[in-house]
Image (tube, one colour):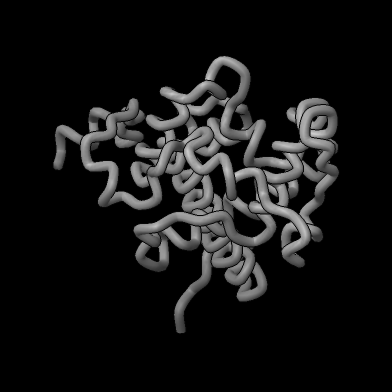
Length: 191
């Protein structure tokens, strides 16, 4: 018969196993947040977008655009109607991007999906509504665009702010600041 240590029972065994599993999951979550540079996504810095190298052409085209002095990526691509909506959208969109980049091949041609086109149009109108309503007498919304009653801003302004960059193959000479590797130096020296 195996003698158990003092105070050990089979009920405690499951507590130890459960604690070990939770510790492992917590460690994996912390490592994932570290490698993905998670804290950078809490801000509005455009350089955050190039955490994913696939975004380098769009970052570079924004740098050369007339929007650069006035906007960041989040000013156009994230809802501005309230903090809750903004953070919910960032979380949902971020999880979508993370799953695409982790579990499948990212598309070569990137287009707005999942309501992002609505957000972009609403942000165009938010900033440019005085110009749009005063000079063109145009009062449009996303539903009118979907039904064909109106054009989206980018139907005419195709090169604002990302020029004609539409896929990675058309932007082979683009450069952008790539973030430092998240791998610690001590681990790099072992590899």
